[in-house]
Image (cartoon, rainbow, N blue to C red; front, side):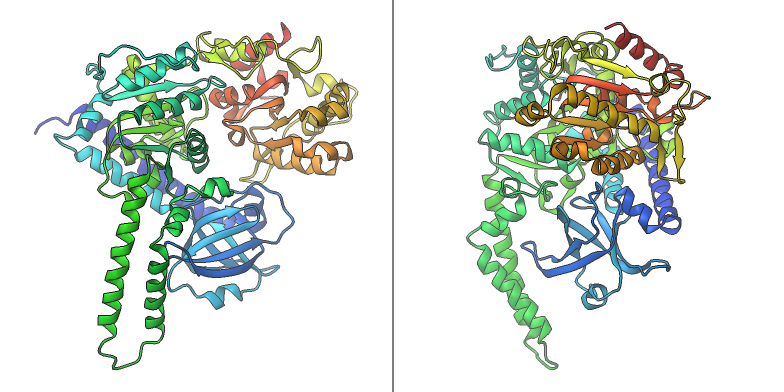
Length: 630
């Protein structure tokens, strides 16, 4: 029996690990639904309750949709986004939730308004008339099925481009092919950005743009896409999340590039909607005729009489005409677009079946599971990955799958096997030099430099750009306040109330130093970050209650590290929460997450955390020493 080639062995292992993750997520979801109260799910952002039903209608894609409005006075961040499955339930006080036996799919969310696509047999009156109606995220079976299918395709690929890319990515001795033309000049890019764009253009197989925080990765990627479109008629652009797809799409549209956004955007505004597939579909000249035919089909079905021999003939004739119009509209839409943009999972959509592209661009590739990257890879000849594997990793919930290597991304694999395909962007435009330097030294071998324009940026004269404040040391031995962390519930996480109190006290003190009018005039913005969701919720509640911050609330964002990925603020405060005698720091050991946290600030970074607990870990010990020596 012939030995299984190493790339296929590794991918079979990936499939096994993905299966472990699938079973773990499904089991966790079932357990969460059975054991976690709806109030807790609402606080976690996984449910809305109560909701009020609004309009129901057929959208341009001929899906029946229902509008739901969140009626609770709650500004909790939620996890609803396009494509995610949801379940309806009815809940009366003191009783258990009663779930309806079908799923719906999120079409889009706008503030407190949620639009879901429902099955044709949706019991509308039964659901909308239910007492205490609510909606919660359901287990996402579709995404896993799409990833399993992609892995099966790449494992079984033989003698084609997909098989070649698979073997290349997994085999260090194979070398990525390149074209031999000379470098082009891009005066508006810096030297490493220019090098990255040239490397993308030369690559026949793969190129990687490694973008540390603030180095203009998106600017570089947009330029690489624009230059590629000088040579190709159309490219496929993907990212792990809807938000990342929105961001790159918006930047491309700003450069005058025609984008067709598959799936609905996470931020619903006119600019974003104007280049979505659904909105373009509705705007097509033939859409009015198509809608009239679909309406006629629905009326025929509703008014069908027994013994109507011509019913099937009429319906089939109308359906045939509708399909013909739909094909014509899609040909026009896809023919006009220079960029097709979607999530990695969204690239498996039926509308893209049979489509081929020369080049695939994957943004935020370091946050995507390898299996998800293989979904669009089967449609292309070459791939460009952009991201930073020293920042947020993919989300893996099963520890067994994580330890087995499911968290190792395709980008990391290619960086390891083919470093010659990587260009590191070295000039950052976000942070004061002293804020940036620790991250550069620890994560990037000291290679990242600050642009002259930002090197000495600050808010106050003679200010220290970075501070570490230890709550226990600040309060002293005589304090009655407990600076230790607390555990809230089985699944909700850790909280440190004293540290939260001090975080806002430190911010108030800093605002007083700057001056109220200057903050408002210059719109000095602030990010308050904590790795723990419970701490984030507690900080938000405190912020709402404190009168001092009322004029500044529009300038202050409070969120988890993951929520701040890709963002920046003038001032950042980080509440690390952990404070215990055992020196346990949990997932703060994931240093990539901390790299994100400490690189969000442009001018001032304040870290609050127990030195006694955290500095037992070499990273935090080194960070603390660095800050103290400034």
